[in-house]
Image (cartoon, rainbow, N blue to C red; front, side, top):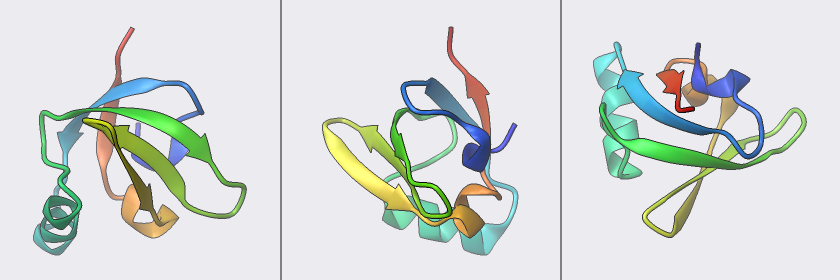
Length: 73
């Protein structure tokens, strides 16, 4: 599943960021493979807002669509 398909309140682990350019953008936001993040909000037709270590990060859907995640139970 990709990050753009998560729902508000879900916790997930970043499993893959295949594109090097996208990986570089994600790293600038403090997101890397293996990180656990929490979905704070999904704005309809807008960004996905995630939190990590008490920091909220808004990711555009285009970027989120290229990040593979695994939901935590």
